[in-house]
Amino acid sequence: MPTPERLPAAASAADDDQHQYLTFLLGGETFALGILGIREILEYEPPTDIPMMPAFIRGIVNLRGAVVPVIDLSARFGRGSSAVTKKTCIVIVETTWHDAVQVLGVVVDSVNEVLEIPHSEIEAPPSFGGSVRTDFIEGMGKIRDRFVIVLKLDNVLSIEEMENLTGATRLQ
Amino acid sequence: MNAIEESLPIFAKQIDNARRQSEEAILALSTRFRGIVTSLDAAVAASEKGSGDGGRDLVGAMEDGKRQLLKVVEALEAVRSGRAALIEEIRLLAAHTRELGDMAQEVELIAFKTNMLSLNAAIEAAHADGDVGRGFAVVAQEVRQLSVESRETGKTIGRKISVISDALRHIVGVNEQAVAAEDAAVKDSEMRIASVLGHFGGMTERLLHSAENFRNESEVIKDAVMDSMVQLQFQDRVGQILSHVVGSLGDLAATAGASDDSGATEAGGGGASDYMAKLVRTYTTDEQRRIHDGTAAVAVAPQAAEFF
Image 1 (spheres, rainbow over the protein chains, first blue to last red):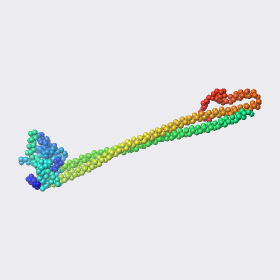
Image 2 (cartoon, each protein chain N blue to C red):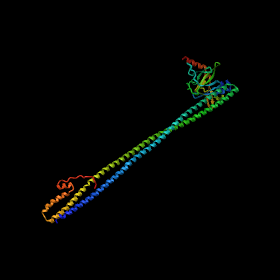
Image 3 (cartoon, chains in turn red, orange):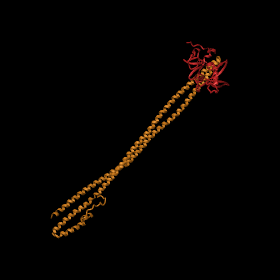
Image 4 (cartoon, helix red, strand yellow):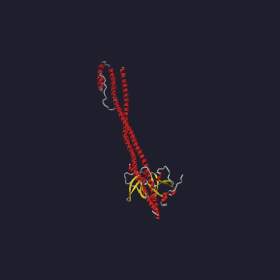
């Protein structure tokens, strides 16, 4: 059994800040995202619908003049959309693809808190099983004796993969 | 002196004795009858007083009782409607607590938004460099603390309100049961009162009816007794007739004595017819004359209901 290894992705950014994570709820489960990948949190407002898009793309929102696609994270996990409530939020995140920064919105059920999770408290993802694809998981973060899934944003929101899926939809 | 002369006064005395005895007996009888009539009158009067005024008293008492009992029912009704009003008030209160519950949820929502604000501040702080970032992070932490506190307060308010709501619902439920029980009690009381009053009414009716019967029967008996008393007037006539017979026997004895003294045998025949004629003259009633003539005695109706 391999010992939990330190994550190289965390070491890539400034060490102090990369310890901070935003936790949020999705389908009753708690997830965490590295805070440096996040730009801001918005109150939910229904995105403008775009035709011929896969189910996990809710539409687009106007963020201070910029067009931002909104991803339905629950649908992206293959779970179907969550119902929109007063606590539903859109988390604006950045991903890099081909050295270009791509800004995306992510719909979550509610946001919890920003907290520090030291590297020592993050363990490697399970090699099989689990409710989320393993390549979406960066590690299992331990918060107050409970594990949260730390997401690997570049994989979850892989532009390449999403483009392929969109193309497939377009072909249908 | 022959046997007739000697026996005639004795016959007369015997008949007179019989007449006197029957007269005394009839007198006593009619006195008793009069006593019966007087008693009956007194009984009827007493019964009229008893069941007439008394009957009215009874009916009055029943009406009074009915009024009093209806007042009891009214009082029960008042209690019942008071309770219904109370329930209405509590319902209004429950509506207010629902509003308060909504407000508590608003507080929680505001707390949630404040939290979002603090999270955005924390994100900004992470992106900022050095001291600025750290300062910003402190503010974000403080705002977050506020949001946690206000969320807790909102939750506490919500919990308290739901406890109050449950209590109010319970009160309304219990009250509704009480109202239903009171409804039943009022209806039951009304029914029982009506039944009791009906029962007493029937009894009074029967009492009045039997008193009426008693009076009527008494009247009938009294009339019969009065009739009997009128019938007893026969004694008057019988007395007269017997007195007359006694007188006549005396006359006959005297006449017989005189003819003996004269010694004239012829005088017997002439004396007899004279005597008969004289006898007829002394009759006072048609009845006597008819009997003397040999016609059948006819019952004579009493002439008047005059008492002796």
